Every structure is written in structure tokens, then in C-alpha cells.
Length: 270
Image (cartoon, rainbow, N blue to C red; front, side, top):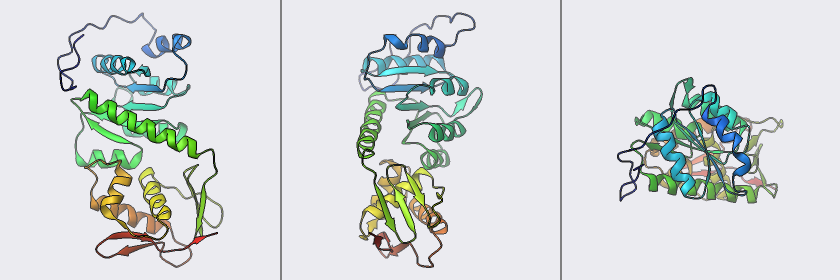
């Protein structure tokens, strides 16, 4: 099996994938081996319909001390998510569904991070993926070292979030309460306001800035995890959507700071 070049990029894959026993999927075989896995390793799920790419990714991350499961379809992904999963590598084109729709399901039912790994490289797909649920958006051919670095970055950030979650962390501002632990925004009536991941991250950054203005460049990093595909127009669109959702008091919640970016216009409540 020859999967890595000197620079870590995916090159010629020269190996054979043996036949699966009839009626037994790879995910079932993985589940049957769970008791043999080392305890405490972070668990990754590779959702990829191409068996060559899936086997390559599973093998590479196993070699780098992760506990890895492979899934070739949406159905196998859902089955794998019945156990703890810390990070999902998700292709967009799957035999029984669309990867974006599956990402929404994962986000609603799991705390796992999501890295899209796909051949679809349009700006629309990149922005949609990051706004919906993705921590990163990676296009094929895959640079394995780059993907490993991104995975470790996501897992490290989520580990910090889990430690912070031990302390209930809510901040009240204006008519609103933002719960940084549960990632919820509550209105004055106590009902949650539906926010995308990018909208929540941007609002949390503004709330955490204590009224200081944040530049658009900084907010690009906040909502895109430092992905260059997200630009100033994306930040402006997210702010516009938040302004439409944060109504009630008559006072603007997010103010524009000319030549800089945006700031929270309401003082925090004690």
C-alpha cells in the first residue's frame, strides 16, 4: 500500500481491498472489534463511499494514534454515531444521500466536529459547508499531513470547549442570554433562537469583546476557522442575518464601526 508522497499528498494508491463477507458491512465489522481498541483515544469516523480513499484515511489516522471507523454511506454513518465519535470526515456525494443534509443530522444529534473532504470545490459549496456545520472544508486530492493538522486543531479546540463546559457560562445582554456552554441564544421569553454555527460563533465573539469593535478580518477567522474561502462579504451577510433575528427591544444589537468592523451595541446585564 503506497499512499503518501514525501510532502504528505495523496498519490498512487497501490493496494487491494479484500472482499467483505456477504451481508456484513465494514461498519458492523468495526463495531465487532470495539472491545479491542485502546481506551482513551479520540474516535474518528471516515464517511466516504470510495473504498480506496476510505481505507487510506482509516489506515493513516490509525497509524497516528486515533481510533478510526469507516462508513460508506449515510446509513452506516448513522449506525456509527450510536457510539461516541469526536470527529467526522464527511464526503458530500454519498450513495444514499447528500453530505450537507447528513452534516445537519450530525450537528443535531452529536457533539462531533465535522471536516468536509470532497471533490466539490465551488465557493458556494465551501461557504455553505462552513456555515451549516463544518469546522473545515478540504478538497481532494488530499494532503494527509494537512488533514492531520486540521483534525488535531479541531479536536484541541473541542477539548477546550469541553473543559469550559464544566462551568455554566451564560452572558446576558439587552433582551438576550447567550449560553456559551450549550451554544444557545435565548430571547426574553426564554425560547431559543435558531442560529447557524457561524452565526453563533460570530455573536459569541462580539459578546465576548465587551463592547470593543472587532475587525472584519478577525471575524473572518472566527467564523471560518481561518479558512481563506470565507471573506468579508460572508461576515457582512452573517451580521445582516443576526440583526434580523435579534429584534425586540428596538435598539440595534450589532453596530457598524466605520473602517473597522462591528461591535455589540448593547451593554451586558449583570
